[in-house]
Image (cartoon, rainbow, N blue to C red; front, side, top):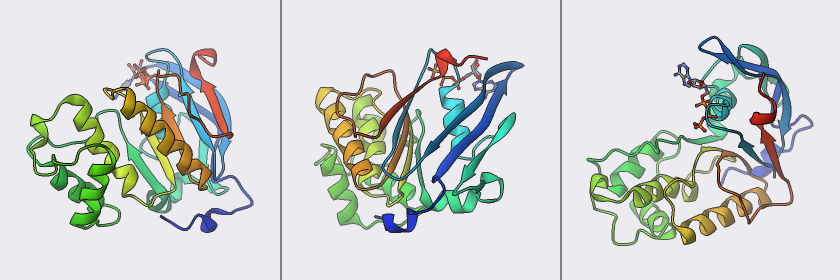
Length: 219
Ligand SMILES: Nc1ncnc2c1ncn2[C@@H]1O[C@H](COP(=O)(O)OP(=O)(O)OP(=O)(O)O)[C@@H](O)[C@H]1O
């Protein structure tokens, strides 16, 4: 893991300041203020189309806000995308798994972007998400839930302290949901941070858990 001590800062790690987002001439939200510090978990909720994915993309520096700004350790994210990338693990709702590659090949490729992982480590991560014996199988032959598990194996490999996860529970069965909830809570208890969207009601949460309802903030 990235040393969490390096995240002890006087400013929050990540902040949304008067953040606004307009798409297709529609204002999804504006005047959004919140902050995220080591240990925090934030669940973004709201109806379909309320802007949850858009907000996550803004926080990850993948989109520009219409107004306001995202700050990383007190300074505008604008000039610090590289710095954020060193601390961020982003898993989008499409999971990002290539069907023609095996589970191991997918993870080798995905990890290479941040911190290359060895075969043993990757196999261990696949075992952690219940995919022992599926390491060499092309992903298009896996079920939707198994493909989601391949993507989530990165949560056992990537040292990034900030996890931004768009609908990570999609297609998971009951035990997969419980295991992921526990893993996210433990990450926060170690000083990591999680921002996620899900329509799922979380049962196993850290004390720092907060909810942001975009449905109540529609502009
Ligand atoms: N690439 C895009 N170009 C233009 N508009 C977009 C784009 N992606 C999303 N939108 C619009 O932005 C609005 C918010 O979309 P977004 O995906 O952020 O919502 P969401 O709350 O995550 O929805 P859901 O719960 O359905 O996943 C929608 O009206 C959508 O049509």
